[in-house]
Image (cartoon, rainbow, N blue to C red):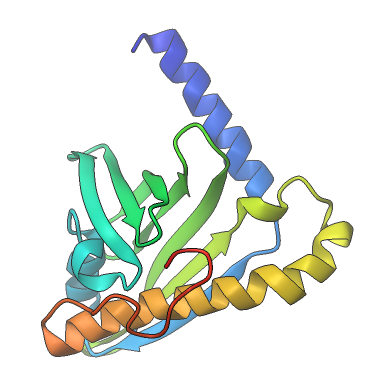
Length: 184
């Protein structure tokens, strides 16, 4: 890919992220009996969703090196999303864009916080693309009645999947916390 095309792609992604940051977010957290570095290893390992994501059929690496992290997430319902990581801060978290290839993208923030010795908290915040074209005023009712409840359920299941894998040292069963209308 030429430098000019790469520069245009970066500008486009920055525009998308800035626009999505204005969308009402959905945020969920879970505490882990792990220190920050152990939790980081869990969430930053290539293909980690295969073991910890209850709606993941397959998590396949496209690129995973020092500077670039891109993977595919095939959901149980056959929906295929690409995750392009935008920032990557060891033991702190990362940000990413996720969505169908060449389709609308959601902006996602994964953050790790130290709670105490060998205790940490993982927070996932999603700025969903689904309401990005609406003003905050016109998105208010669909956000609270439709998007937030479903996205909260999804995020709690994802966080629960990581907790299950961490506590049981085995792959989380698919749909373990119940099926999800958007991804099962």
